[in-house]
Length: 243
Picture 1 (tube, rainbow, N blue to C red):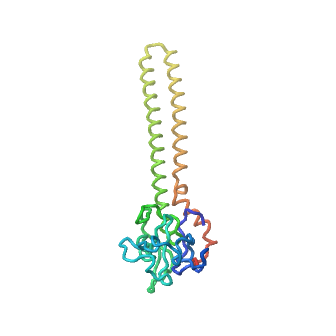
Picture 2: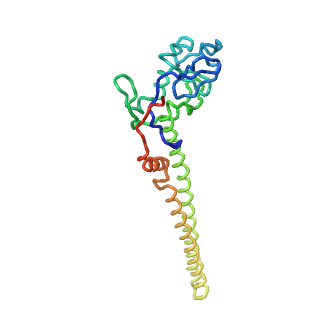
Picture 3: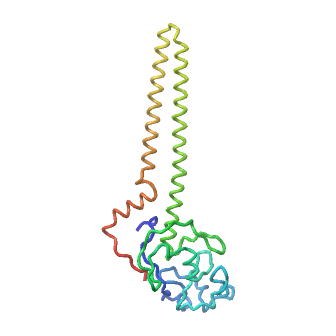
């Protein structure tokens, strides 16, 4: 599945069973990248062990039970509890959730702006658990940039066509002024106007055709995602847990 497509895999909430270089079990989640050995709960320094796991600082890293509550390690170096991070990322909006709080299947969900670390505001883009939410936000950002860029292109085309129309009108007015019985001069002016009209019409037509090709639905960010989904639907498997 290409990077732009929101993930359809179900989040896993089981602790990772891999071992860090120090020989202790990884404190993070199944499916996530294991943190540096300095974040090992058995070996970490006090400044890491006493990091708060939520914005209120009610629980710290050394206090949590990793067997039942694995933690999330952010790229910026901060640590978050699974519960607080799921809430912060609105994860339950992106999946159907069962009575036992298990994730059942992906669903359509309201988009949110790109999230950042609650502590330092570094963008949160590399946590597999939240790929569906993050990639949805990225697709929205890409769509906004697409609209802004092609809105500027549309303005440019309008300005070029308007300038051409103004030039054409000026030459037509000049030809009327010259229409004083000098038929040859008027004829030459008419030819010049026709040439300008032809080149301007080609400019307008070419610009509009190119613009329409760029902004067609299939070339829009969500259109490309949909095109991929439709071409791959026969190859899709049922959503599986990462573990």
